[in-house]
Length: 434
Length: 93
Image 1 (tube, rainbow over the protein chains, first blue to last red):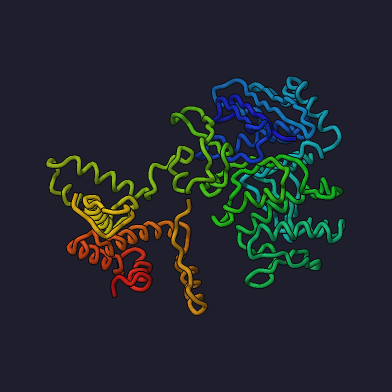
Image 2: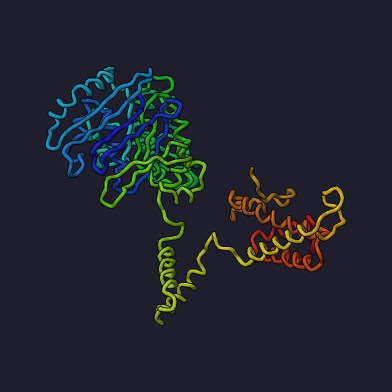
């Protein structure tokens, strides 16, 4: 199952949003990145999708406070989607509810649409595979006294739990890897080992320490358990490990469980990641999950720079108190330099200078414009600013060497143009003045 | 079209120095390759003009001064300029 179209009405900060996931060739787009300042509704989009495809058994667990979804000042919210199955069949699903309605009324009101989705899910939870991760994703220590427990009972709700609950934790990699090795022998462990080796640079899964119930990794500092790796490694290993867990548990009997079709929703995909990793994450997921449709939010220009043409969207408010609006980025971010992307409307930075330098330049300009009317103190300040700003790097600034070089090149050009070569025109030695 | 100038070792003995410079100073990072090309293009124009019989001595002196400036310690890509002007092209000593 893939997502072909999404429409949201009166969902939190979003008044109206239409999003197509179709490419020019009528295929479903594999990657979609969403940018946006905090509070513009990026996470709400991911949660709305998770809610739409949850099915009637998972929905009551995820939709705890229906009113909290409805935009302030509005009486009703609507979320709709077009899904397309592996066979190319389209399914329209929608959820609509009003302020003050309880879950039972919402079920009755949306029965027709939910029946359609449930019919598709009826063969078990292997259909319409949807996995989602919120920003609070974290792993519980497998040796902790606070044992891992699911906050949701339904398996489809569990797959998107961290999008909806900050209490939800990921399946501890140590525990389930050992369990999988026990159940599926070395083949299952090899899948995990290979995936982690591709993802975590300089670190490989070396062995299982069954006595202490930990995975041991070979690192530059020697053999270490997962909880002694850096936070970035742990976070990445945690959610990628959880992703592998859900896929291998549900599709463990498949020859290539990672080749299944599905939908992956990730909030702030590059959370805790060093820029070097941010640049390889898309390729990693492409190679590991070739048939997953992935919808990710990000604040990182390095992640956004991985997007191809038509894959990047950004949310922004037209006015300070207005609703968020979704805009498609025109162009191919993966052909741009990072600073070009930062200065584009997608990020909206006014300058590549630091905020401090930007403010100093602004102050300098306004003092300079005042001209003769400056007070003595203001003139002193103007001189101070001139000194400070003269030491600040400016890539557009022409150096003294540049100026002299340009002047000399002009002089050479003038000299050569004023002399006409006689002969074959290819640079003979006789010349005359024009 | 990709137009750039990279620093490469001329022989085996120079290899480890080049590798160290690349590792610690990022000598061959993509942005520098392109910037180095821009300086090379200008230097090459000065070379052609310097050896051209179509310019007078006064202008040749100005070009000589410019070549000296481009080889100064504080000039960008001075190492490349020194190598080309002194060794490869043998324009100045």
